[in-house]
Image (cartoon, rainbow, N blue to C red; front, side):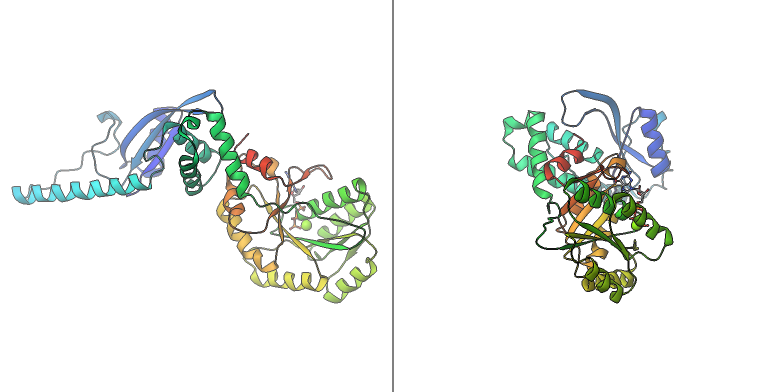
Length: 371
Ligand SMILES: Nc1nc2c(ncn2[C@@H]2O[C@H](COP(=O)(O)OP(=O)(O)OP(=O)(O)O)[C@@H](O)[C@H]2O)c(=O)[nH]1
Ligand SMILES: [Mg+2]
């Protein structure tokens, strides 16, 4: 049995949602008024109506008859009395079993009101239901009862829990003693070239490092031109390579530089062959660091699947881009908790070189919670 819960600002809107998604046969099982608090804040938010509905269950609706979607089902021809009672009993038993099963899976089971609110806040921050449930259960297990009554303390504890789940790589370590070769890989259009420009400008202009650029993105003329424009503005040497031999040659010619940043062509996560080709190229270059670049505005499942596909390129770190465009960031949690590469940088805008920062677990946890 599938139960769905809808929230809207009025009963009318909530019922429209149910009608749209579940059709006119949906049974309304429960309605309640909820008030969202701004995340873990003390202020009461706007009033919402929450409606739980199902197309699978056949119980009398809690709504007034005029609001019901399900017209009364035509009565079947009356069977013999004992048979009818037996049938009803069996139906009732099935219904109770289904409701018990749902109750066990439900996050609201026995949850104190404060934690239920944390759960709904997490859902609103785009955290997957499964992850939200796990976090709330951990909170319930670990939080002393008197602390539960203090939203600020609960929020702080939750933030620390998230923080502990975010692996951090730290920034690229550049030194004059040993050259570092760092490649950025990832799907198309996520911001690889822009991020290379930001990194290059920061290391060159702020840290006064000797930086060079290499692009292996020769699939599009515009891609080479884009990087060349940045190389000209920042005043950096740049090489375009399309074969392993050219790669070795380019690296040999730039072996006096502290940092080589390597831009690669965006690859579809579904293109396993191209991703393996890319890995061979990076091995040839001796890239000591491979940063997988993913956009923070991607859905949680796609983020996980894309990271899985790009595992073949041997990423050692993760960069999340376009955080400025995301309305919520709970979608990145499953990826960060999946045991993949640790985070190196976050980018939050199109401006070169400013819109980049070294990833910080506490700050990102706060961003995910909408602080
Ligand atoms: N809002 C926002 N836009 C960004 C960010 N980083 C990059 N962009 C924009 O995203 C678009 C694509 O950026 P590119 O750097 O060309 O992306 P790419 O990954 O190199 O793309 P391909 O080489 O085609 O695979 C550009 O319009 C960038 O300005 C960011 O942090 N925030
Ligand atoms: Mg590019």
